[in-house]
Image 1 (cartoon, one colour):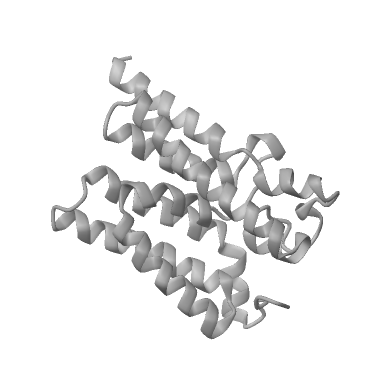
Image 2 (cartoon, rainbow, N blue to C red):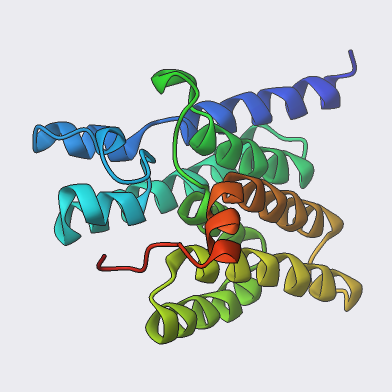
Length: 202
């Protein structure tokens, strides 16, 4: 196997293992609570708010975002550049959603994806963040806001690529991460369509 291919595999593997660190479960253990035992059973920020409270959920969010940032940094170091960074980013989100450390469960990938994409396409993340906050404020539907923001990151990143502001690796990562986030929200999509999705605070 060519050296560049080995580097790419290494970047993806490292990204996956970083993303697979179950921050929500680790924070929950400090309070004697497993977020998987309540709510959606997920380990991300939204379920942490319901099962652990706002303060611990903020710690979960910071940790999950950091996983994306670190995975991109490690992918960059392993190479090959610039695709190593993109491989680390996408693999980190997969690891967060399907963590080998907790029986391939996890969160929905939004915070980890945001942490990764803020390195690869910060303008796209900034636009999506405004959208995310606006939708949550207006509807209190975190899932709807997350789906919309993930889609926006992909669209804006592709537009930035076409305009020559980011490389193709960023566009590919943005699209793949959005796809992973959307698949991780399939149960939410069903509830949104049925009008039975829980709102933040319920």
